[in-house]
Image 1 (cartoon, rainbow, N blue to C red):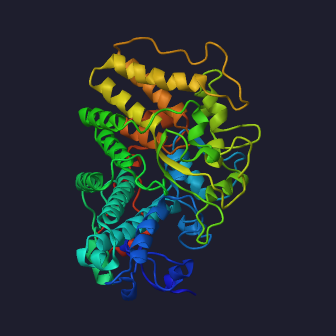
Image 2 (image 1 turned 30 degrees about the vertical axis):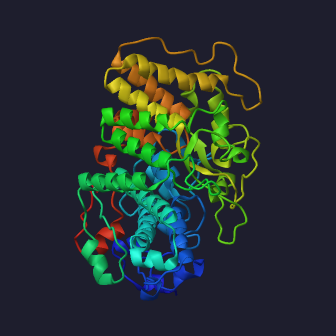
Image 3 (image 1 turned 120 degrees about the vertical axis):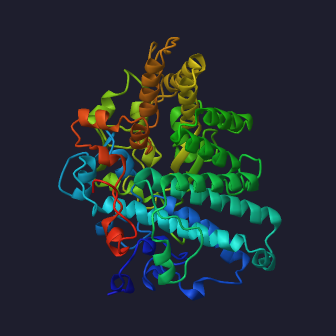
Length: 497
């Protein structure tokens, strides 16, 4: 029996994780406890760099980052596809329904309770990511330590900007899923520290912290498309501005959305790729113009960093719903480029159009988080909300034009008349309907749909219409019940659970 099973965890036992340099470290102390010897008061440049790089890892689709095949804890992989896609009307657990991993079905039909491992998994991954960013930030804001390690000012600033962005990203995921959550901004060493921070913070303050971190990150990163020309996967200034725009979108600050997207566009770094699938094609990673932020999966690395989600795709997992397939207009190339039904290939996740990578638990296909088409549709939504209907429709038509002129899965072109432009309109409701439709088919399988439905206050009517048992309380997920129990009452459960 390893030590993990010998401790009673509180919420911060998922929060206060030490940076993992070797997977064996996970079994030396309970997850969440930072051993004193790991909190290096005199870190080398390599230690600092490793702390920053480790901060990215919890966004990846790499398998078994927290334990080994721990399905019961929901930590075999990051659960975005479950809590954001299966929960929506886009995905179902498997092509052929069965009883395997029934907890995913419970999320699908909203029959879950607070002990469902989907929520424990996403909570653990996000707070582990936050713990890692906190450690990196602590190193990088210690001027004496940075100087002794020999970090240049440029490297220090860039690394700190990356870390602030990543912490903001993890907290944004938490506040979207759970609402009020604990906020931890420094590394914690002792169990007594853990109990002190095991308290919910109102979601408004969480959003303020996210905005603060992004503001800091923006001032630290270079005004170049890639923060590091040889490591193009790192957080860039463009990624920060895009996430700022998304924060504004989720808080319905429409004018701010428009201003930030305009700022991003003024950088002239991003544009729609001529072909829709180029953003996902593993052979074109960092050689196209649309992806703004992605996790760089690689095969065969010493510490595994491949896209493990390709393995369950060969086990029958993650299939489109009939409702999702029927949402596409006739001959829309995006349907087959997203998912090929006959061979059961989820092309976007595989990074290929021929089924390659299917079953590969160490695949090189990247995980896409932000791309320019998504950002443009944020701007269209904000323009519609502020009465600029003509420009909102123009952006929607820009997305449709790219879709209909993209190469199809067979390398051809769509028939004439495919995806005609939306007509001019001053009907805000009609334009919003067009935008909602375009986001669904453009961004399918990209973990956007459920959050879109929630922020539009459309989750209940849309999901009940397709037979799901969605209730008002489900606009937030339950806090993992184990963490509620172990907090001794300092973390109350979300209402209705």
